[in-house]
Length: 519
Ligand code: 5AD
Ligand code: SF4
Image (cartoon, rainbow, N blue to C red; front, top):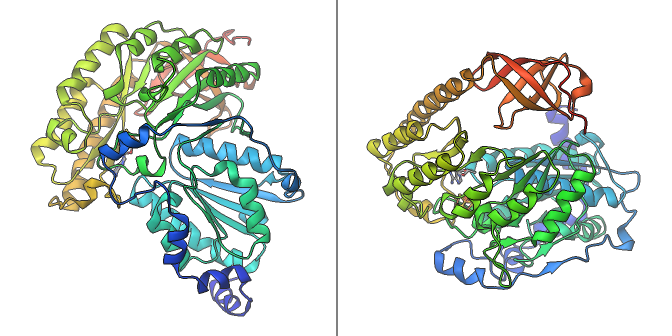
């Protein structure tokens, strides 16, 4: 069907009641109905962050799929499109787990799906634009298949302006639910299937931890494990404390049990996940227990590789450094977002450390773990960033010797303090700065890669290379991508590879014979 035919059909197909209802309801009414409680998108501030931290966290162990929806998906298919970070990727695994328990089967074909969920990211404007593009693309499909359920979830659905825009302009969406409502998916799907209204359930209750959620993990080699949710740091540019809510930690025994379970299933690597993992345990009122203690416990578990992300320099304490220095399954790669090399900009970002504090932390880490690889996140073009301040980021990049960095141009996010600042830096200057920074990042990455030439590294083999099925691909302990020729039987195992060629972002090599570790 071409675009013109689609448009014509759009005019003839009777729009179902759901869409009619929404049209007749003012979006302001809907908004005030669903955004109550503690959601205050316009004025995040530190006082409020502290206040909300003190509200108690409840942990629920009683998740179960209600009987009346347990077979609702039989013979039907689901597709979840994921945008953004690992947290979202992992939420998708949970939603896939829930839908699978309801009888749905996965599909990667939109035309084949009975339910499509867009698990969205709000961190930068272009992430949001992509999702709105996809929402638009799905409209003709919905008009062709009125029984199709289309849902929007993830971080964008926690933003009032986004929900408002969907209610006003995208009435073909059936369901909007927030990051705290994932466990309610069975009920929400049922309501969307049988109800007449667009279902909006956002932020119904912030602050709880739901255990025992089913998961369908992507792959059998590496797994993500949430250790905490939310963020109370309130960096002035960042939307996350609003979209993900306050910091709340899972109990250590629940995390350890999950890791043990993964070991029993044969997983080789776990990545402990949180927006600010160094704040792990700060919300416990009954025990003194931090990330260092948790890593120490996981260090003793028989899993070959343990990573964690994302770290905040401010809360990166000596106990953690001491534990990481033990090595073993605790890998010597630390991702430590610095954001800027200028103390003035860091202050404006509310990062709560200076350039010198960061360098001091790096010194401490390097002293305890001499061979450590450091990578980072950097934002250029924060409002009114001067040339000198940007230069400080460039010099910090060199001084620390980061081997890789995710670099971004600052993107104003509605409701964050930085977005209210007037900004006199032209977009072209910001782009130029990003370009210069990326040149430096590439140079440093390439240099670090060169040091591997002729050396043998341990690679956890994940599968075939995307470009050539004869070539296998995997990651070293320091998270460097390695492509090499080897037997398919090594997939899922840790093997030794001799590096023959170094590229900017990856290494080529040959497998050293007889190195397959039997697990
Ligand atoms: N604009 C640009 N980059 C941002 N990040 C977070 N918020 C913004 C924003 N408003 C970056 C930070 C963070 C990474 C996940 O995304 O560098 O560490
Ligand atoms: Fe955002 Fe990370 Fe800062 Fe939290 S610590 S506000 S997630 S940048």
